[in-house]
Every structure is written in structure tokens, then in C-alpha cells.
Length: 172
Image 1: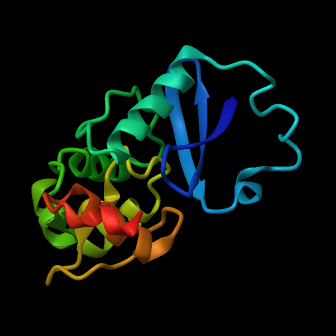
Image 2 (image 1 turned 60 degrees about the vertical axis):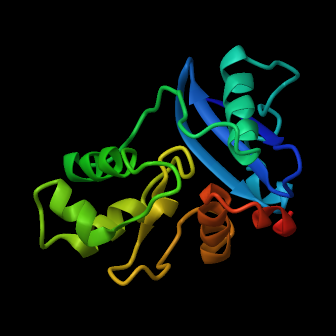
């Protein structure tokens, strides 16, 4: 497994990607770089080598946060049960700037009573932002849960970033 830690232009978060070959396995982020460094792996992170794949992920994330990219084009390795994979695949279909409720996602995968299970599967997403679990909300549109770094505040930021408003720049 290869790892790379980087910052995206104009954002005070650090991102860590874990990948094998040209397949992304996980994306984590934090406002503290040290949170992303596993002491046992720290000597193996980067090692002065940068793969084209890692650079491409960094570039796509940079363009996403600059509002120049609305859909990622990155091969992903999604782990979990068939149910979890179906949920994350459906979440991946939610368009940029839109939201769906956990119940709506459950209905789309033909499990209309599984809204809570959809929430758990969304919470297990190891590739947030790229698999846009921030676009999933509670039934009445409220923000509920976010497994990515920064919690609900960052989920709110991501949703605001994707809106058509120009005022989002004030947050930077």
C-alpha cells in the first residue's frame, strides 16, 4: 500500500491517500498533519517518490475545491458487504450540488426500510468527498453524521462549496 499526504491549495486541511497501483483505497483528512501519520508507516509515506496516480488525485481534489471539477475520475477500491457497496455506488450517483436523504438512497437500492443501515454504510465510507457521502442528509434535510474529518461542520462546508452561491469564498 502506498500513501501520500498533501494539502490542497487554499484549504487548511491535509489529505492522506492510500492506494495500490492505480486504485484508491482510502482518503482521510484532518486539519492536523500529525493526525494522518501512523508512526509505524511514517518512514514509508512518500519516500521522495510521487506517482502519476497520486498527483492526479491531488490535482482532482484541488480542482474540486476550486469548483472546477464536479465529478471525480479515479478508480476506487470499495470494501464492505454487497449492501455497503450498493449504498456507496448509489451515493456516488448523487449529482454535484444536490442532496438525497438516507431514506431516498434506501429506496433507490430497493431496500425502503433500510434508511438506518444506509446511514451506517455511508458512515463506513473510506473514500469521502470522492464518494460524496456529504450529499446524504436526514429526511427533513438536516445534517446528520459525517465520518470524514471535520465532522458536521466540514460536511456543511462541502455542501456549501457545491452550491451556486459566490458567498462561499468568505469561508476560506
